[in-house]
Length: 219
Image 1 (cartoon, rainbow, N blue to C red):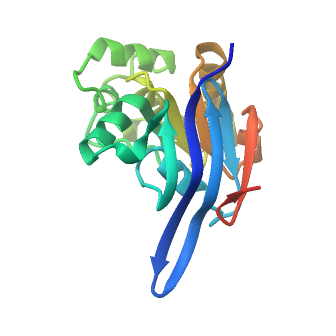
Image 2: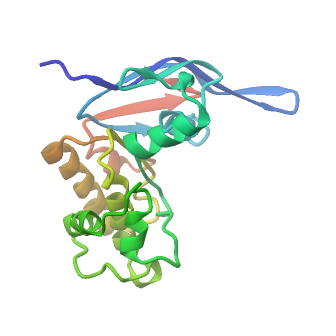
C-alpha cells in the first residue's frame, strides 16, 4: 500500500531582505515526506535547515511556492487556523527543551492540550521512562530527562508529524544516543513521522533518510 504524503514542498522559496540585499534562505525546494518516515536534514550553518523546519512547522510562511500538509495547502489558512493546525498536527522538540521552569513536568506536558487530561499526560511521561517524576520542575531533571519531557509534550496531541530541531545539541553522547533511540522506537514501533535537523552524524545515522542542504537547496 502506498504511503500518504504528510508534507509536500512545491518550489518553496523563503527570501529575507537585509538592507538592500536579498537572501534566499530556501531557493525552490521540492521535497516530499511520507507518512511513517524518519528523516534527518544536515548541512552547514546558513544552509537553510532551520528555515525548512520553520516552514514545515507553519512557524514561517513561504515567500513563494506551496507547502501542503496532509494534502492541505497551508497558505490558505488564516492565523487562527494555522495555530490550530500546529497544535493538532505538529509536535515540536527543541534543542534547549523549551520547558517552562516554573511548571512541573506534568504541567509542561499538559500545555499543548486543548482539554487537559492529566492521565494521558502521565501515560506519555511513563512511556518516556519518567514515572514518579510528574511533580519535578525542569531544574530538578537532567538534560536527557528534560528532553524526554519535551518529547512527551510533542506527542501528547498525537500529531501527524514530529519536528525536532537539534534534539541532541545540548546533550552528552550517552544521553544523545538515548534520545535518538527513543525517537527511532517511536518511528519504527508506532509509525510516528519524524524530521530532525542535526549537525551530528551519529544522530543522523539513526534515521532512514539523510537530506543534505547547501545555500537553500537540497543537494
